[in-house]
Length: 111
Image (cartoon, rainbow, N blue to C red):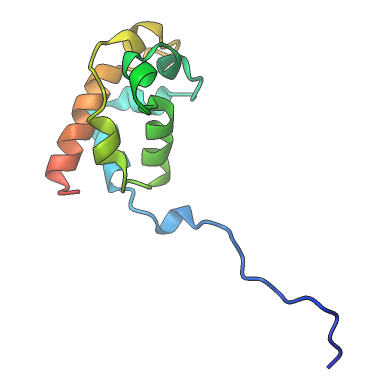
């Protein structure tokens, strides 16, 4: 066999279907407006906790949708529950109830 000077690398794709989607299903069953989010970032832009910590509601939403729930418990505790995100959401997502539902999911699913 001829050596061309390169090797075949393993693929770096992420299989999101293999991730844990229990939290996403739990949240959708209790807060249907969760599915309306378009990821515009208005909630993150007005977030009081985001100004002082690394809390980012948009990234949190994306992690839950993808099933990457390992860091959700530590991130959600940084929310100050001020409600600014609820006021600026153009799609009317009930973010305050969403935060409470995420906390309930963490407790009930034992994450």
